[in-house]
Image (cartoon, rainbow, N blue to C red; front, side, top):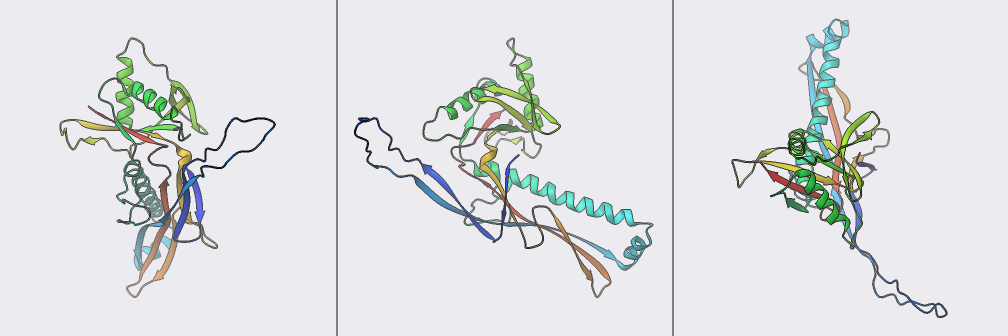
Length: 282
């Protein structure tokens, strides 16, 4: 549900507008003319593509067995497992990647969404559903920017906690069915900007809080998916948006080497305005 964009170079750039021009005014209809007093403010940003890699090696004996057909399914399964492992690593890092900057990378991982978003809040009283409604209203009430969340993301355990809170209330919140991708229906919560789907993702961790170590920290991510972009390398003949497998040939030790690579990066635009992370300790 996030945006994708092909790139042809290692370093890519984009522009974020931090302020709108405000020059409109009422005036005499017989004397048309305005004075430009403010101009829009924009900030250019940059990031680099990241690399996820994997590898499979087969000795001569196993390679010959697969050629005979009797064990061909083993190589096929190993390939699927290796590619699946790369995608799992990518899915984890999209949320929790350890990099701390787009322009000046500090690690080889992504700058994870949970680390990139700077707008945060805590749920000290009330239910998760009430907190979502209130925070969405606060974001919608802003006049300096129009960037509303399009979905709510949380761990399945957090969704279960949210359901338990609602079941304990006499005035239970009404859930709505929302089709987030064709064939996949999730529950949604009504807010002042409409129904927001609640999407569960087990890559959003539920872990012990650093301060109150006896409690688990549940993260509720109000995400504007239109402002999250996955950039990937588009080669002349090959797209690296998904893992690409190369057979490197037989080495001196008679080992056949399969190398898998994927080149991409995930960028959160307007991390201080368009999104918010709420935390509830339980």
